[in-house]
Image (cartoon, rainbow, N blue to C red; front, top):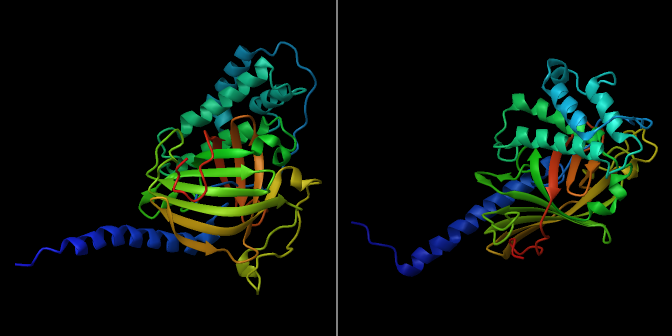
Length: 335
């Protein structure tokens, strides 16, 4: 009969096993850093072609109730399900109507935006923030998100003061770890932006509580980065450059002012913490960069498209709501 482990030996196992788990997760995060659209679990994507939608003149008799009814009726029709974004479609016409001389306090505009958000949240409900959604359902979500993007009243969201602060990811189509999944663990993906310092933190919390699920987390991964207005020059895939810097000039976007909507983000380091204590930090190689296109922004909602190059075909989309508070950095989510 085997002897029971001594108490001290047993305690070592209790401590070492979580540490080994955390270390394995850290290795997985770093090994997967190429997949970070904005980093492990957190952040955004950019459209392949930015369409400048014209504002229309004042439209009479455009009340909130009829706008909401027509929008939902169109979205539920066979035409609406198969013809998103067509300039001749009723949905597109209503989106333009909602933007007439855009007044954010106008009841009609507010009603259409609120209904667009409602349809998105109905579709992503019970999908574990998109992680359990069937691939066949994702195009419909993308279309709904595109509808909301077309209603954006902000011409330069990347320069808007409302970017500041914490944001919680409600849905993304990004793969692990960018979708908040680390191996067999799943957590809350959060982003905290500091406009004055030109920095942001991509944060992942596992086992947390509080309004955003980021307080008192037993495991956290914090990515520190800096952002700059994008100059429109596409970022080469790191594999395409001999020096691995990923800072090539393989073309440029056609936008006149790409910095108005898009940031170039440079990853600096990622820190893993267990029960609030930092146990692992890894610095990224110089030139580890991504693009973030802010395709929708209002007081409490943001859509970001995050890509490796800025071209659009490698983008992932993130739908976020404003967070309750910014957690203290590297503390495992304690506020």
